[in-house]
Amino acid sequence: MKIRLDRYILSSILKVGIAAMLLCTLILTSIDLISNLENYIQLAVPLATILLRTSYYVPEAILLSIGPAFLFSITYFLSMLQANNEMICLLNSGVAYYRIIRPIILLAFAVSAFFFLFNETVGIEAMKAKQLINDKIFLSSSSYDNRNVTLNDRKNGYLLFARRYYNNSKELSHTVLIKKDSMGRLAWKMDSQQAVWDVEKNNWLFSNNSVYVIDDNTVNSYTTQSTMIDDLDISVELFRNTKTDIKTMELELAISYLKKIEDYDHAQFTEIAAEFYQRLFSCFTPFVLMLIACSINYRFKKNVLLFSIISCLCIGVLYYVTQMLTLIMANQGMISPASGMLVPLGMILLLSIGLTSTFRT
Image (tube, rainbow, N blue to C red; front, side):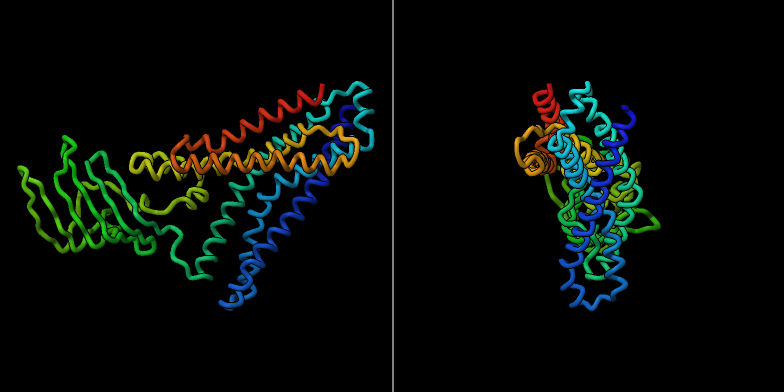
């Protein structure tokens, strides 16, 4: 009896959930294609390239569709269970409501695990390929170009500012390099028109430099055509705009990169870490949405499905709005980067548990 009940619940939810996910994926893919159609026509993009780029968007559309699709699927199943009086039969036969939603919760864990594995194995690779095609089609500058970057080499006492970083040429423009002595006081400053990364020497070559040296409370200045600082330990990859890159790095590499960037630029670290934790914990979004569907009171007298969907959407909107606000706060350093995702997850989790205990006694 119990095995058949679990099989009935899971098969009913999976049929509707997969169908809804495929439909949402088709809609999102069509929207992406139509939104770029004018650019495709103006740039005379070949049909094969258009289809290839669109196909690379499909994994991202699937990930966006999983949560809402299973939210609708569970809401539909439980509301129909109530509307057809099947819920009454189950409860009167001694089956508790927690017994009914137990396989749904296990399914929610399975869907979240699938979300994480699919994103790490398929979604990230598709995102990289799509970005390369975008750069080629729209002739945009590298997505790793960056502006107004300041990095700190605490070990050797250097502070380096660059107005612009060009990833393709590994070049910095309008740099300011400051050297501090052992007491933390300003020892000298160098303004440069540009700096180019020397691959062989693994260091920056500064050009057209104006150097200001402080000696016994006096400032001496001189100019040089080119200068390389041997003990400067600020590598080229630290200047890259990694807000997108952190989402496409391998997981172990992303973790080690976060540890490294935290030592050099804490302000940039907060934004990048918030993006990383969003990538890491976004797999729990389907779990939260499916839990929301289990916590709704389906005892409406009329229009059970309609009012159930409205209730789920209201709580879902609350979750996404809260997540948006906490992510903004995490990017600005007002809260820790991990809290940007954990706070809305914890809030909805507690709300769902509270609603379930209130409605089902």
